[in-house]
Length: 121
Image 1 (spheres, rainbow, N blue to C red):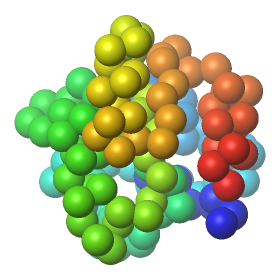
Image 2 (image 1 turned 30 degrees about the vertical axis):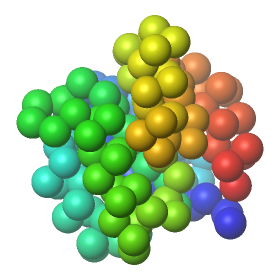
Image 3 (image 1 turned 90 degrees about the vertical axis):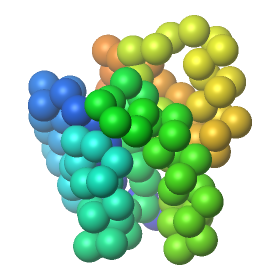
């Protein structure tokens, strides 16, 4: 599967703008959501090929949202990469256990991000 459409789920406008910018410059179509409710709206509007998921958000956190998406049959096949400032090994393990395919810590290194996207595609 070729990854072209990316959904960024992050409540930080700065982080979303940074990720959107580097992804668009590399030819990806990007949409974003600030919380779980918005994320499900974006999923309904246009199913992405990849979700970049923050962990610390108001309401449902990224771990909970990753689990919810993975339990929804029509979205369960979308790879999720946790993209968070939580850099403990236990966080990474927990993210993977919730269904994330990979885990990257902020500040995001663009070459690391693209290597992870390429590995998924």
